[in-house]
Image (cartoon, rainbow, N blue to C red; front, side, top):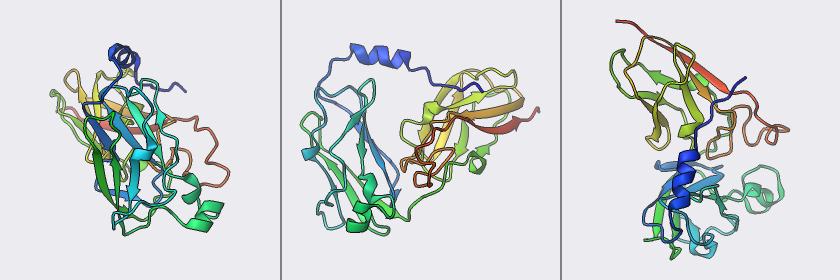
Length: 255
């Protein structure tokens, strides 16, 4: 089955022209007020690549008393191909139940507590900080059948809004495409909103009546590492490849 991928060529070309240096603007996802106890990834989104790897000695995850949570983060910041996103990994051994670090230390995050991420790497124009309230763990696969498509009307360019039961990765907007009644991809722009719990798509042209389908890339994940085919902690499945895209159909009715 054909998969739909976001075209990143233009973004990569622009990034190549940008001189590495101080990141004047940056944001953190998850951007909502809450994160599950089994949060696996935090993403730092930059307006230009850093000149050097993020200094993890200047990155801290603090508990509600402002004290660093020991061994919460791996000393392994990951940059994407264009250097515009840096991923911080929470220690997976403290997330998966029954493995050594989880048994010895318990989870790094605990439901009901407040936690704060603080980053003051001098490569950033200003220190970054985000606080979350920790909720119970989310250990289910991503299920598009639980997504809700809000109706739009033909003839206009109203943004299509798809509400999700849980947040997606901060860079996941391009992993979802829209197929129109003619079987072709609908041109337009997509973005995540409401703490990455809403996918919004603004078409380049007026909506036409007919049957549409959301086509969701097999590699889509949430910040807990849950995927379309399996939850992060699913036995014998967490390392298996997801090969089938997700589909969600809806109809724009004729007036």
